Amino acid sequence: MRKAVFASVAARLALAGMGLAVAAGPVVAQEVQEVTVIAPLSVRQPVGRTSSGGTVDLITVTHRVGYADLDLTRSADAAALRARVDETAKVACKQLKTLYPLVPADPDCVKAALKDAMAQADAAIAAAGGGK
Image (cartoon, rainbow, N blue to C red; front, side, top):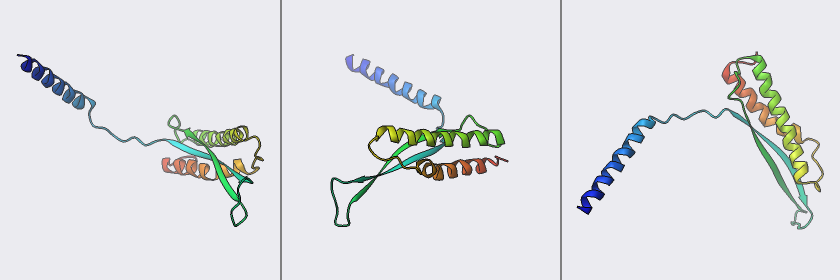
């Protein structure tokens, strides 16, 4: 009798699992609508030296800028995405300065962060057929 109870419970759990799988339906991959902003900071480390004279480390801060709420076919929304990317680059560079106060700030940090990020934004706008 005890085996019958366990078998009955196992059968119910299996049926419930199949029901959940059917209820969930097919899984569809969704396109991630975001631009990645990477703010760079080059740091020279005077502690250890190589035979070529020193080491350079690259420290980065990465932020993601979502745009799922924007209709990139509209020029106002395309401009809004570009503004978000610009502001995020400034925030990321400021964050680097806060995290590494003893390292001289890179005056080209925002420009470097915007180079790839704005290209991503422009590609998303172009793919949507907008920004005109």
